Every structure is written in structure tokens, then in C-alpha cells.
Image (cartoon, rainbow, N blue to C red; front, top):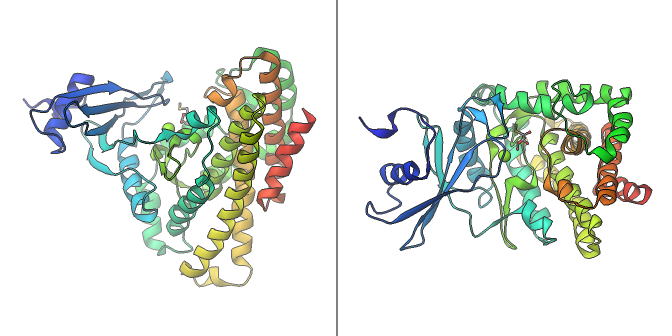
Length: 402
Ligand code: SR1
Ligand code: MG
């Protein structure tokens, strides 16, 4: 019986056999190596290289539990969502997504372009590398992938069928728990508080009832506002970069949700990089990160307005004042989500290296307090954020105050 007709979790040797059988990318006698390189929380990622020619591909396979915790049971269907979204992103934002060569719904895996000439953005930022085109690229990516999938532009029956196609309940549940619930009450008993900050966090986060109310409002916005096909996990570990190029990977959390979820994740994770740079006194890196955060918001606004003006189709969306109202809501969600992401990455189960790699206790305490102070203001005052400067002012003030 053929080997890949029933699902099983592959090992390196299986993956080599698999790519030879499934794609004509390599010669059948080629001498291939395979290495598991996944460092994410969910999947297995294999790097396959032809020893003779140097040609390479990536194979990504889903298991039925998360790597980060066997208790998290997951549908393997997420690779289908990821493959389809990557293809769509390649069409909507050319040059900003890896090419998908094959999706396999039996083995729950896909074969895609190897981006080894790029670096994971988070890793590069941890080395204080700067990327002058990042704000330009990521703002283009967000506007060009998000706006065309909304009712403002897409034919409404088609949009509804897309909402159905991209229903992603298990991955959404992870975000509903890890981002929108557990950081405020630890109801699953898996938050991880840095010991030296425990009492401060309990008071500032667990006991702040006004904060909980605003987080609850944002949770129901996440679950009920099927605004656009969002990436759903757009942090700096989902971006591959060079000085000239930015590619977005890992859209397995994609579903129809609020646009601000993507924009807010980008902003929050750039702030983590900034805070990490500040802890290491890398002033020029911090200055670049500040400018980049501000530019991402302002370029997003400019490109959003331009794209809307040239692509809007819905008659009522053309009413005077509607675009400004819609964008105001996106920016308010952006601030709220950025605050939630900053809270959960400090308080919750899934952390970021930008903070956990700070070895000096006092510096880590300060970095976490800066993040959480910013987060609280983003969440509570989210309706007041309109420009890059609005976001930056809060960041700078928190760095001064802590
Ligand atoms: C159980 S998965 C934990 C986190 O990793 C992913 O990248 C998402 O951000 C998720 O919340
Ligand atoms: Mg991911």
C-alpha cells in the first residue's frame, strides 16, 4: 500500500520520500537532507535541501495537538487554511508571501518556497538589526490583503461564502483564551508571571476591573466583527525579512475578524522589539523602532484611504464621512488589540523572546512594566488613537515613567 494515503506525523526520512513522490522539484535520485526547524508553538517544519544542487523547499505539517502543550487539541485542517491564504496573499500583495507548491489534505501538510535567504524578523530585531523598508512593506501588505476582503469592496454574497470557508473555530478559541481571557483571570491556571513582578501584575492586571470590562468588549468584537480575512497572528515571528524584502508566513489563524487585530499585532510586537532595544541601551535601534512604529500607522492610514477611494464598491460606504468613521474604528481596534497582545505576551502562556531574553532581573521588571503600562492605556483609551504619533507618545511616556 502506498505510504502517504493515511495521515501520520512524519519524521525526516519520511519527508524526504514524501517530497520526491509529491513534487517534481527534485530529481528522484537526488541526495536530500531534511531537518526539522520549526520553532513555533503549533506545527512541524522541515527544511529539505538537495546536497548537490542546493535547491530547497519547506514542508510544514500539522499534528493534532499543539507543540507548546499536548493539552491543546487542534484540527489539522489549519494547514488547508494556511495554504489557501498564502496563495491569496500572493495574489493580493505580490512579493509578500511565499509560493505554495502543494497542499495535501491527507497528510495535512504543504510544500512551499524556502525563504532561507530571509531572516525571521523577531530574531533580527533581537540582534538590533534595522529594516528601512519594513514600514512601507507591511503597511502595503495589510491594506492590500485586508481591504479587498471586506464588504466595502467584495461582492456581499461572495464575502459571506468566504466567511463560511474560513471559519476557524479551534484556532480562534486559542486567541479567545490566550489573548482575550486568561491574561485577566488565569482561569486555565497556566499564566506565567515573572516572580519579581508577580505582585505588581496581580494588582495592575488581575485587579483592574475597568481593564477587564474593556477587554471583554474587545473579545466580543473579535468574535463578532467579520470585517475582513485577517492573518490572525501577525507578529514579528510571522515575518521573514531582508533589507529589500518582507514576506508574511504562517496565516493558520486566519479567519474573518477585525482588521485592527492584524495591525495591532504588528504594532505590539514592534514595541516589544523597541523595549528590548531600550533594555540593552541600543539608542539608534530604539530611534529606528520608534520611527517605524509611527510610520506603520501613518502609512497604513494613507494607503487605506487611497485604496478605499479607488476600490470601494458598496453604495452606502461611499456616503460622506463613512470612510473616516470606518477607519476610526479600525484604529481603535488596533490600539485595543496592541494592548491585549502586549498584556498576554507578558502575563500569559505564550511569551516573546524580546522580553524573556532580558537576563538582568531589574531590567526585565522594568521592560514588563513598560509593556503593561502601555497596554493598559492602549486598551482603555483606544478610541483616542488616530496617528502614529498618538501611539508613540504613549510608548515614550511609559519609558520615562518606569
Ligand atoms: C497554543 S499557540 C500559542 C500562540 O502561538 C501562536 O503563534 C499564536 O500567537 C498563539 O496564541
Ligand atoms: Mg505562527
